[in-house]
Image (cartoon, rainbow, N blue to C red; front, side, top):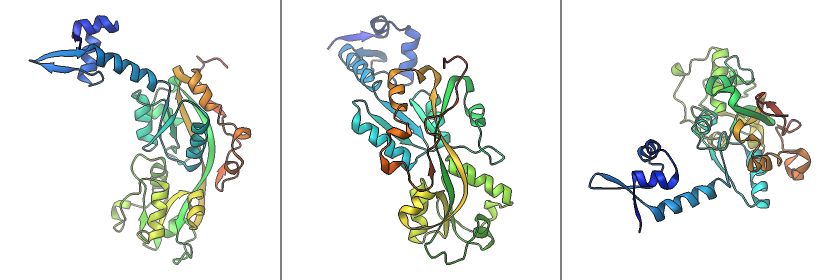
Length: 293
């Protein structure tokens, strides 16, 4: 085993020595301490470089979860050598991961403070000129209820006027941001509401709370209610977007992946899922002027 000092590994990698210390501090480079001295194995460093090179061939997507999006990703992974991995952690957390450089792109659906949908989230969470936004599809959000609707719910407001148990979504998810805005519009103070079930971490999780009887109602996308045979009351349609850093937008691997979002190339069973409108799939809705057309 060939041991390198910080100065030697700096020269070996052609990276400023201060940057090496920062990588060590962040635990982003393999190292060991011996007698208070930072040391590196050249063989392990070589393997680390190789592993990171291999990872650059793949795509990591963070952000909001969606059934149709997952199906498209699975379809892509079956036909391509590189792999797309998904970390579905909610829209806001997904943006944070993207901004930190730990993801290639991110899926988001974030309502404005007035309950409408625009690109204001770019200015709230990111630098608008550093990212491209592509429309994936529009999807219908609404209320999940038991199949027989025992409480005769006709609207979102009815859930609270009748004091029913509502399964909310996790903080940071696009659906939670939307529901909180609906609460505000209706003048509902959840802090004063009756005890609610624990927050659901996904659309399917919210629907399962209703199906199991843990909750009387929840909020999510129509397609999940169709799968589980739940009663569904539509509330609105929302855009589901993909954010890509501008400096990666024209890379071969990104271009290859986003080309799969073409209505004519989707399998037939994905083109007519209930609750989805894919007529805008692949449409670029925001691109910095620095990028060519």
